[in-house]
Image 1 (cartoon, one colour):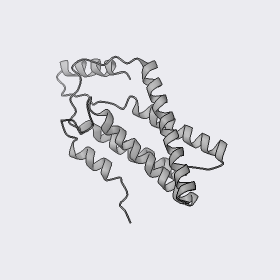
Image 2 (tube, helix red, strand yellow):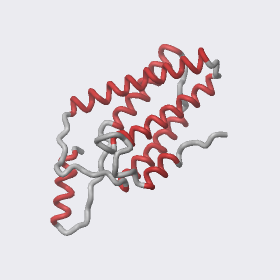
Image 3 (cartoon, helix red, strand yellow):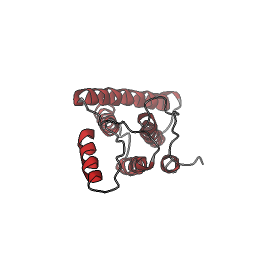
Image 4 (cartoon, one colour):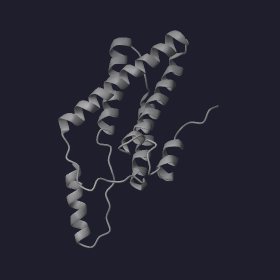
Length: 171
């Protein structure tokens, strides 16, 4: 669904007396994260014979990231006064570029963990999982405001709790 469709639905429901609001959405977050994870897994398996994340880790990424995404509905972001018109070529181009950059960054992390720090493959999987999880959640903060991520209004407590509550605590 495009933002202009959401806008029309909200307006129609409001004219009929319903109390309705519209949240922002992760228009580039979802495709970017999907591209990043799928490209990472494919390249790592095909070219390095290494499984960078387990199936359980993928499920945890999906479930925990969805918790943060759902909490966006309660965030304090100022919406646009008019519906936003998307240029899907631009959205997909940016999502693809960011996905590729994310994969390159993950392989740099893999190289450092493997060659410089000499970590086991199980430990490297854990590091990669944490990198993907943190990157996914931090993207939420980057896309919620037009300016710097610390811009006002501040993030809603429920969003902060959803993001930081899913971070593992240090041993």
